[in-house]
Each structure stands twice: as C-alpha cells, then as structure tokens.
Length: 439
Image (tube, rainbow, N blue to C red; front, side, top):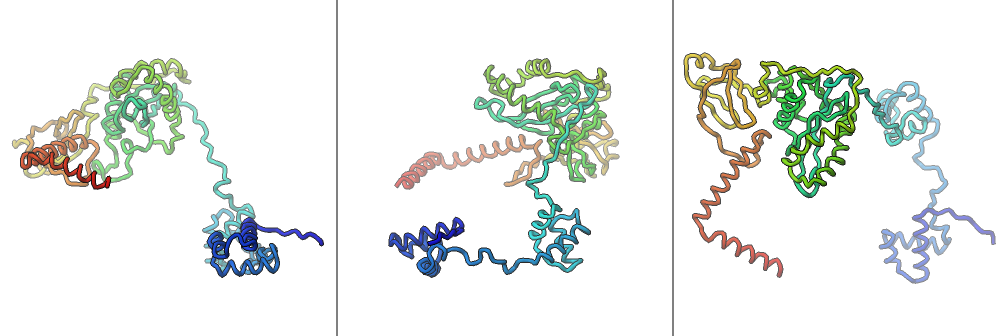
C-alpha cells in the first residue's frame, strides 16, 4: 500500500490524539469535549469523520482552497498603483480614507497596511531604524552653559531615606559645580542651590534644564499672566537665561554624570557610613573636588564667562517667592490663607487698587512692597480651615501639615478629656475583633 503524506496543524494533531483515546475507550466523548473546549455535538461529528477517514478526516476542508473573501489580484494592484502615484508618503489609515473618499474603493486599513508593507511603501514601526541622537560638541568656554538636574535615587541605600541630589555640571569642562542633597525638587531647593552656586562661581551665561515645573510652565495666566515660573523670574532678574531641553538625551552630560554619581558617590558614602542628608551634604565638597580632579576636561577656550554679581542684585530678595496682589480699598491683601492689613496713612491710601508684591522668604518672613518700598502691615486674620482634599501649593505644604497635626492633637485631647477610658475601650474592642477573625 502506497504511503500518503498528510499535512496537519498543531491543533489538528492534538485533536487526532484525543480521537485516538476515544477510540481506545480511554476517555469519553463528553470528557473530550471539555479538553478540546468544544460542544459534544462537534466532538461527535469529528469522531465520526475520524472513524470513516482516519487522521485525514480531521484536516480542514478549506486548506489549499481560495478564500471566499479574497480580493482579486487586479483590484489589489490597482489600489497599490493609485497609492504609489498619489499617496506615496501617506500612512495606511490615511491612504485607506483617501481611496474611499476620492476613488470609491473601500478596503480595511489593515489590508492597506499589509499591501503597503509588501510594496515597500510602509515600514512597520518595529522595523524602523531608531532615532540616532548624535553627540553635541561641548561648549567652548567655562561658565557658558551649566546643565542642572535632580536625581531621585536611594543614595543612602538601606541606611537612610530616599532623596534627591541636585546636580550642576559645566558643559565645557564636565566638572561638578554644585551638588546638594534635598528631600525633593522644588522651587526653594533650587533657589538655595543656585544661590550657593552664584556666590561661589558667579553668574553663568545660561542654565540648561529639563521641563520640570520649576523651570517651565505651559499655563498662561500664572504669576501675572506671563507664564514664567518663580525660578525663571529670579534668573531674569539676574540676567541669566534658562534653556529647557526637549529630551533627556539632549542634556546627556548631566544624565551621564548622574549615573556615575549613583555608582561612585553611593559607594563612597557606604564606606564612610554616611546615612543622612545632613551628613551627605557635609561630605559633598570633598567628593566634588576628587571627582573633578579625575573627570574634568580642559575647555577649548580658556576664557571664563562667569560674571560677578552686581551690587544691586540682592540674592535674598531675588531668591524668594514673589506674587503680585491688588491692594483693596480697605488696604488689605490676602496671601497664603492670611489677610494682611496695611498701616493706614496718607501715602498708603494712595495705593488702594494698585499692585503690590508679596515677598515670601524661605524662613517664613513676609514683606509687602510697592515699587521696592516695604509697606508696614499687621496680620488682620488667618484662614485656618483646611478642607479634606484641599489643593495645597508645595511651598505651603509644611505649614499646612503642621497646622493639621495641631488640630489632630487638640481633637485627641478633647476626646480623651470627655471619655478617659476611651483608649482602654479601643484596645479592648480591637482584641475582640481579632478573636472573631481568628475564629
């Protein structure tokens, strides 16, 4: 008897083994239906074909036949010719829309995608060449461009809390200019680090940063409608530019420095047993000196573009939170949930309905000025209420949390005074609940 070669799919081979077990009475047809995830009726039909024709009866009858919904090759070539002529740079979805709108040829977008790939008119995303981020030459002069970034990392490993390292690196030389451990990236932490930088090195031409909200805002109408952040406002007063990179690769100098710091700095602090932000900041100057000796490069131009601070540039005034307010007819200003009453005088009465600037310093001091002249004031009223789910600015978070803690302590004390045995009853009820759960 001549041997016959049968082509079967993996699914069909699995069905053949199940049919053989039914024939050997090792399983029932009902059990086979459960295994194959089919109805009993389907299994009965398959088994009948298997008994009549053998394994050949399990092979799909459609194999080798032309599908009923196959688009004729002539129509396919016609559609591809139109795309090549009129829509060669269109995507599959757009090309399918134009074929229907203009040429009255309707094809599914995935069909057009497959045809365009076959005709080499479209390259699938997974086969496209990845974008090449070409290296950028360093700036020529020291102090011309300073890259800044915040690196959130487990700097103290299991010895201390996770925190952020603010890193300032010179683009021309690659040397670390300023580093500081902080709890998180915020306007005031960048104020503090930038002030330390300026006092030590002077004013650079520009800072180069990412799109963190400290450096850039897309919302018009904030801070007087100019869309400038507090940090941007401070640098503008100092005549320093801030440039935001479009991608992490664009500021690769500081990104690579972060990776090096996450390796070397972490291990150096481990060897010294440093386990807190305060200890880390004390060690950073020593580490920066050693780092720059090893990794610093000579600039192409020896000129130092850092500028000295001007006499009128008061960093205390510049690096503080500033917001404009309109003085009411009753000479009051509301800021940060507090109403301030300006001292009544002939001069201050003239300022009603005029703009004043509130200066909020890092230490919590508040000054209210008009044309750089401080106005005497007193606190008229404090709005203490903090609602559930209140939106709180980052700069107010510490004060709000402190006030919440005070409120909670007062409530606890009042409850304890009303019911001295409340704490005991609470512990007892907890133990009862645990017993019930265990049962």
